[in-house]
Figure 1 (cartoon, protein in one colour):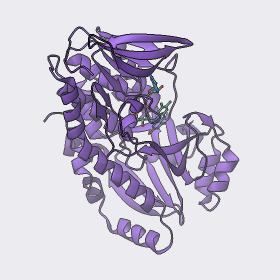
Figure 2: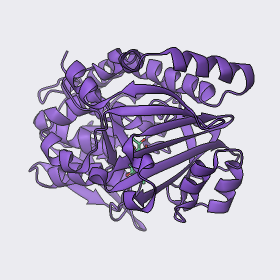
Figure 3: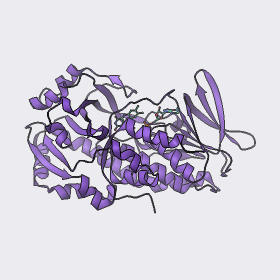
Figure 4: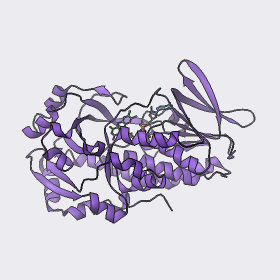
Length: 400
Ligand SMILES: Cc1cc2nc3c(=O)[nH]c(=O)nc-3n(C[C@H](O)[C@H](O)[C@H](O)COP(=O)(O)OP(=O)(O)OC[C@H]3O[C@@H](n4cnc5c(N)ncnc54)[C@H](O)[C@@H]3O)c2cc1C
């Protein structure tokens, strides 16, 4: 593969999800020309809530997006942790003003579609970025004169695009990953997330007053406001063998209620308040595997999809975008070396956060004496201490 940074050739970014859109903007800010491809013909309003911690907001600020995002975001002051067995509150975690003062950036909860639309509008308004929808990136080949060609499928037709690098931001089921020898594979966790949003007026006010995290044997529940406080995002997670690649498979509310049959009746009433449940099989990609090879690099879920137990999946994709761009100035001479140094810089942080989220996947679902010990520790914890425990994650900024 070639190594030079021919400034006339574009960088192809595969995937216009959260990481791909952020990477297109960050790389363009370095002076590169960008072709951003997504396999879907239209970026539809899919998904539900995402959390944008201060570390992600620091990058979004660098991209000039915080003002555009603010009307869609919610920044509640506290997260309350509850026992799904007894229905009693276990702990309060400070968020909102506390985290903003501590780290300089807000902790936001937002609908994925709102975040994607704000990023997309900025991408479309940025000269030097071409968006090509309906193009599924397949491969990267070197031509005899050491030029790189990215191959893609557009409907039934094969297409090609000359480029100097290919960034795989194509999500947990990445195809670009196959271009990185020794890459990690997507692994199903044995857990499924049921997701819905309901208007906040459709449920009792306690559900939107403060975001909640409910813990119970083999299952847990998260709820928080999105869409500027108009809707409540509800995610119910449980152990289940169902596996599917799609994000938008319809789920049966009665099956969900059966999974949550031992939960308090007010939680079950909340679950019953929506008949529009979607389900999503939780998968991960081992972050310690390789993320780059020659002129190809992976970012976001393609490189290191994680379980949503630290709410850092989108944040890590956004951080990747900023760090990748810093390693690829416009006059970069050796792209493979730059991509390797991007990978080196990111790997220890992302691997550590992925491990914490695996650990939470176990502790959130404890039963018996382990659950008792966890709940006792939570009851004894001070709200500020619980919030400060992740200082090194939330306090990260994109500058060296
Ligand atoms: C439809 C959808 C809904 C989601 N909903 C939620 C949610 O409700 N809550 C949550 O926490 N997380 C959700 N996620 C995941 C979340 O967006 C990611 O975990 C996180 O933002 C990391 O983003 P990413 O850019 O790495 O990947 P993603 O945001 O998953 O984006 C990947 C993009 O790559 C595109 N793509 C895939 N293959 C190719 C290819 N061969 N060529 C070109 N493009 C390709 C996909 O169409 C997609 O747009 C959702 C992801 C998707 C795709």
